[in-house]
Length: 206
Image 1 (cartoon, rainbow, N blue to C red):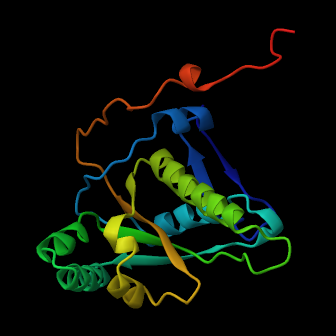
Image 2: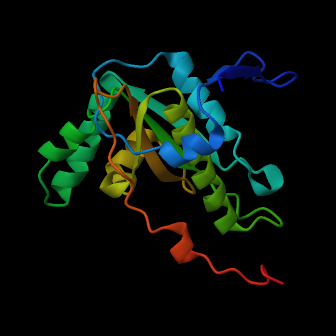
């Protein structure tokens, strides 16, 4: 059912999210979409994705994340940094430059785990950031955008870290590419093991 809601009494009270599908449907139909047109989504649309990300649950409210949005010339600079790192490692620098421009926007999700704080368990910080990225991907799908989460060498190459100005205890959790899907694009069927094969029911029939 189509509807919309406003987050009354919160810092995001100005954010209206048109709900064009039910939450469960969004989860079950979301797909990674790497092909995009050259059109760039509006800044307020990207901000909505980040707002969805920071709404993720995190134990002790540590907020173990920050975000860097790359577009335009920043994507080219990112590609140059990635290419420099690849060349240093003896790999073809052309690939990274091309990959950096696959979508008009990249949201870099930077994790800053707070495992040094009392009662904070670092692995829970990783789970929280994973939830944040899934929130952003689901929001993108609900808005009809093409989005894909990527990691790979660019998440670990020193030159990319330097370009992003990572702190000593920060890491790249993932790169979320965002754009619009090509006209007529239809995602394929998911390659997932059925839930029935992965689930053990204990005490259910008592």
